[in-house]
Image (cartoon, rainbow, N blue to C red; front, top):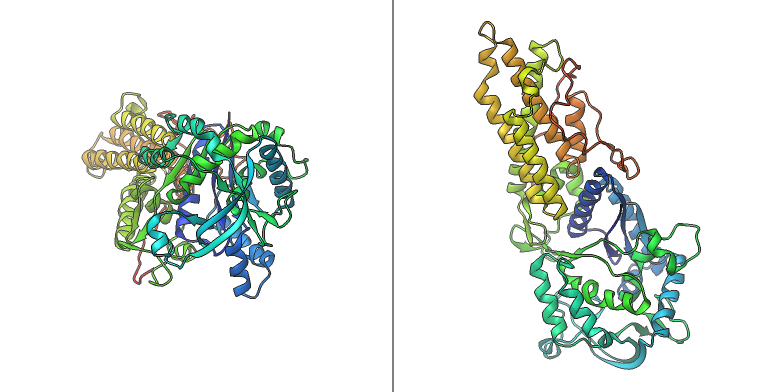
Length: 523
């Protein structure tokens, strides 16, 4: 089975921020889960590199637009590598193949009769790269998102005849599951119900963009160009650009993950463009919420922007992944609170999960020759920790299928909590002092170690590194995290069977699998 998912193609007017990191980490968890289940995944990310905003940003820095794009795009690529994002394709819209694909796509749309010339008048936000048609903005010409003055534009553009697709788009957005979460669907329905209007797909006198074939002086509007990057990314490096080959390369995408601010482009404009070009439509568009910090919108002017590189250096991958995926309901807005961040990481990962494995392994090594104790009755499928592990696995798989990272994390945490409770109730440190209790203690420690193995297995899509350290502490190999190694045969689903921890196998000297997070200064 093939599964294609995408992040947005990030706009390179500036370097990566926490919002783009959050989106990419979420997609990475989805991709890892799918691969671990044996699916062939194509995980696409990359950069959108055209438009007036980029041209002006480059000019302000004394750079050519290409030099600016090269630097910022490379920053994205390197940052994702440092975060160990398991992307398969990284597309840049300045790739020469992308220009060829855009030209072929436009030829199909034009041949379908969906390109017309018209005059575009209105207030324009360079930062958004779009016209603002809300009446209140015309009276107070400031972008409500960027809080910057709007510019008046009056020019002849090429328009895509979106209005021709009113009925098809209405049917599409009502299709169950196409727009997620459900709270976003009503927003799109309201927009479409107002009547779809043709939208501009070109700009004039803008050198930093792809020229429109057959229309001198016009370059493609950045959104028309950028959305097509998802298609270019599927091409093999040396193959000719052929739109008809896309279905065998993994199109349509099963999932676009985007910020809610660009939902309209992905759920309305993009499907209509694909319909015009005769290409399949994506299966699902998921619009997640925004991140704030300590209840405030993040911004340079406020000096409260969270730098993903600083977070990585000071806190590490596991801590940040856990907090963002475990504490924020995916789809809702989220608030990054430093105290809660450190509290959750220390309580959940260092204490509940990490300490469970550490103390159980230490007792097993001390009393059973540094090896996994004999399982005895703990091997039986009706053991209470076996039932708890199977329930947790079902919940994790179901939740990740539904992109509910928080529910998946909570199910894993609950299993670790049940195992901790079992260990405390059985109190092997007391039982071991009583003659004839060795067999019962062995079974109890085996059961808790096996439950810890399940915790490590289930953590693999969310926290691959912590999962690997836990498995290594149990004397087991980690699940490999590179894209090809996680393909069919990874053994992840097979590992979700009770009693696979081999009695008598050596247990390495225990080390803390998760260090406590001590943040003595603001991030």
